Length: 397
Image (cartoon, rainbow, N blue to C red; front, side):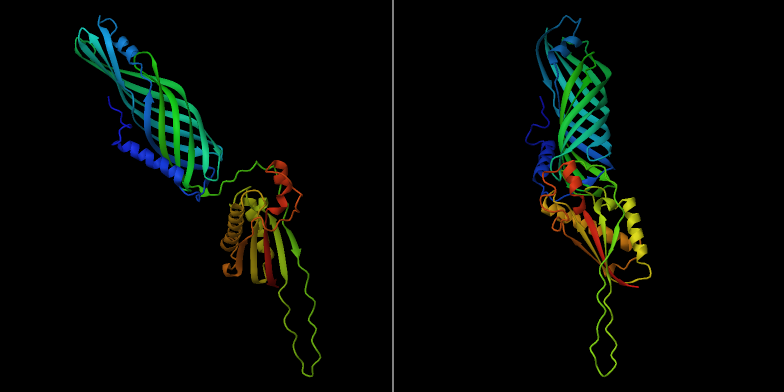
């Protein structure tokens, strides 16, 4: 009997081993794409149906008067699948797929001397709900449940005393399916999955066969933007306040020392203006993508600068203390860069006069002890003032 994936010379085994090794050993520097997005996927692996060769042989030989003396089976083959899916959010997606479980065979030796050979070929389509549970920034646990329509093509042949077995049969089976696995973000454009799926298909003799498929898949998101994953409780609903304009105090007028000659006073320094936006008024929670309300707030800010001669605009991003220091630093910088990009691209401000800085969790507004505890709805709401983007403008009218 052949075992396609168990041989050390099997190319399928090499592909799966290399894929799993890449999944486990890739540096944790990639980013998971931000939902919603459409994705495509291709996978391969090994199908392992549980063939009952004695039962199948007996059913084929019913009425022939032959007695089965021994049976054998080859119940492993390379499985392939292709699928398209839609990720509604970080936790739930839906997939439509096509699969080929492969070819399987069984044999029965009879008295008087003869041999029965049976073969099964299984293909089908499936529709699944796929749940994801983030484990780290790049790794998620998967669970799926769905429905499949499997088509089985069977044929039988005989030698020796088995003279009436040559025929072909077909059968369809509609049944539920389920599976578990892991998904790892190699890059924002390529995700790797390792899964085990369980389902059933018809044996073309009135019964069904349970099959388990172990597979590795490459998933390619379409049109998704990368954002770091972060383990935190879902935030409470929050309505962002309007941005507050705060004018810094004007410097005192210069006092010229008495001199004989008339000397013009030095020009007054450009007044400083500071604007502070809550992060949630510009972005979604734990995101660096500007929302429509955030763009509208930045449009209003840019309009307030009309008629002014701009010297400098400093954009500084801040986060709360939840999450790692490196993660918070990266997110605060991404948000500052997003604000600059919009001010330059959408409102026409001079990019050379805008600087950006990410301060992460270094400059909190809340005091130590104000928001004690790990991530929860209460703590996230309490730390809201720390999540902000400050814009400091030096300009003259």
